Length: 170
Image 1 (cartoon, one colour):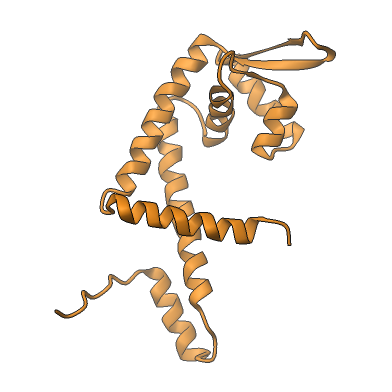
Image 2 (cartoon, rainbow, N blue to C red; image 1 turned 90 degrees about the vertical axis):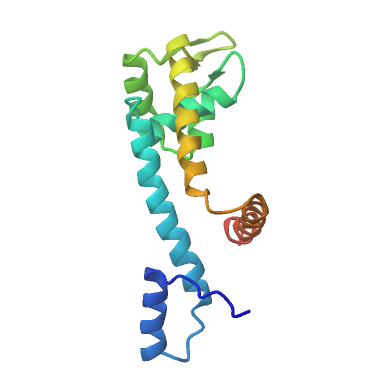
């Protein structure tokens, strides 16, 4: 049986152009990272739309989701949030201000540190993040519809390995 012809994408076109002008280059890495970049952008746009129906951005989703994942009582310090989300303190303050105005979280004094604060999900914030994470997961699952479980597991293993090699200390 003849091998099924692979569907071509925009990255293939770019690689073909490089092949014509610089046939000496090994462009496999460019193919991998070009696709990862395009996939990240495309899914980022889809996730932004999924969260917009709840009136939150991806960044605001990240704050609410981090509090939700922390478990009851859904409470972290601004510093813990900033570190987890790799944000500046100014960026975090803006997100917290907006989410607090909407009643999705509240800031209160830290009982163990009189100079510190605690950020806690409100009941409304908990309900919203649970609906938003469900909608986001549905969007992600839709993107994987044409892959079977074995392929998804294999992709996860390969991406985990690549991430370990690229995101670690150099």
